[in-house]
Amino acid sequence: MRHRRRLNTQTIRKKQTAATHHSVRAPKRSGTTRKFFKSLLYLIIAAGAVYAGYRYLLPLLTFPPAETSETVSTVRNPLPAETKPETAAESQPKLSPLKKRIQVEVLNGCGEQGIAKILGDRLILADYDIVNSGNYIEKGKTRFDVQQSKIIDQLKTPENLSKAKDLARLIGIKTARVESFENPSPIADITIVIGQDFKTLPIFKKD
Image (cartoon, rainbow, N blue to C red; front, side, top):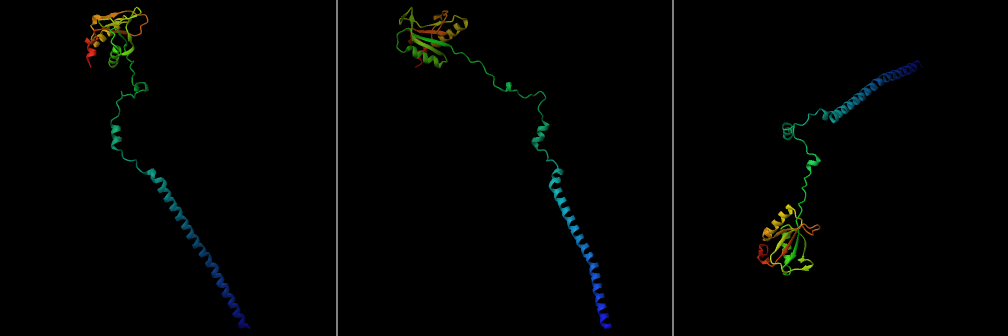
């Protein structure tokens, strides 16, 4: 009986010793695991910091690009101090007043059909404004017996008289045949009366 008790006592002691060893070693394993996880956590944090630095801080530390030749030339060749940008008014094209075309009346005093229209069309090509054409009427009667063509200045001004003489030279009428008459309500600035000598006028010989 004593022998069995001793065996039982020894068995109990072995179990207690084994339990004691087990309880002592367990903390060691737990501490190693914690250290492993801590190291792993530090490694993850360090990797995140490296990535953030590469992603956000590296662009701020990069040097600006070198100046191109175009930039250098712009810096080295500034505009003169006296050069000023054009204002809106200066940039707009300047409008010149329109030149007034001379208003001319062409009358048939020779009886040749269509002669007034022929002369009017040729004067239009010479930049004259034909405002009226028809038969020559004097004192309420139509006259086709005008022998020599003539020009009448209807405004009786030096400027208009000069224009009437220029027109006479263009047609081929002598300037002595240019008359001035101050008409209070003229139809045109200048009146042309075509006479029976129209065939001798240079403007009709251009056919």
